[in-house]
Image (cartoon, rainbow, N blue to C red; front, side):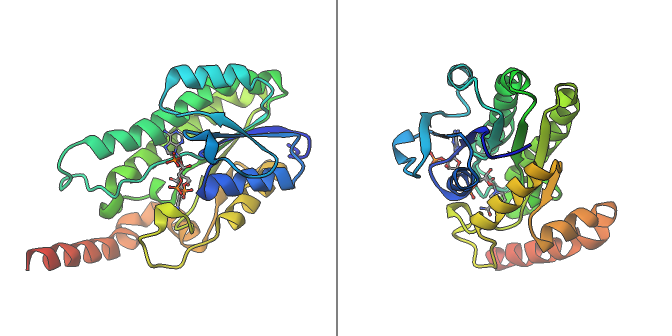
Length: 246
Ligand SMILES: NC(=O)c1ccc[n+]([C@@H]2O[C@H](COP(=O)([O-])OP(=O)(O)OC[C@H]3O[C@@H](n4cnc5c(N)ncnc54)[C@H](OP(=O)(O)O)[C@@H]3O)[C@@H](O)[C@H]2O)c1
């Protein structure tokens, strides 16, 4: 689909990658860009129309889908990561919050906007997933589970919306230089570079974006993940646990 002249809505548009998505859409000549955020007053990007939206609130999701019925490009970017293990976490609160936002929130948005996309010629959905869709890292275990679930829903939504001509794009990335990755001191790609790749893919009709080398390697290693991907993670995790118990 062409971005120029399209009407787009980006969730979590107030900061980080969502803000970069919104800016890139304006730059590519989208006719209208709705910047959805829990705090719409924080959406300050020129040319972006603020919309109040918490994607875990089904009533608000339905209301925004009705208010923004001209949308032809939905960018499901909003997400949370609470750096929580499966076993060591004190309770299930983080796991539930991540699933509620990253999986159920994204699913609710896809369901709410599917009729508008059909009415507007099919359009496209971009779902912001992660390298963590492909493997579990104990440092952010329940986040990975929520992104794996969101990957599954993305593949399913693509199948279910094919008949109406909706392009469904899965975006997987390793570390991106935003607040979410602020505490990790590793090489990161810029949110602007991800936004460019993603909208190039939308315009080219591609269904998957693997945004960096590590993500491409991990995806290619899936058939042999227990030989290639997990052993170094196990080693790192065991060392971290031993460091704590020493
Ligand atoms: N940064 C990375 O390394 C990385 C890597 C791979 C994938 N991702 C994914 O990229 C996406 C964007 O993350 P980011 O890096 O830009 O992180 P970020 O800087 O933490 O921003 C997260 C955004 O999501 C919004 N959000 C969270 N829960 C929401 C809800 N219930 N309703 C509406 N908005 C909500 C936040 O709004 P508030 O300001 O109100 O909290 C914020 O705008 C996420 O899906 C994340 O999982 C990030």
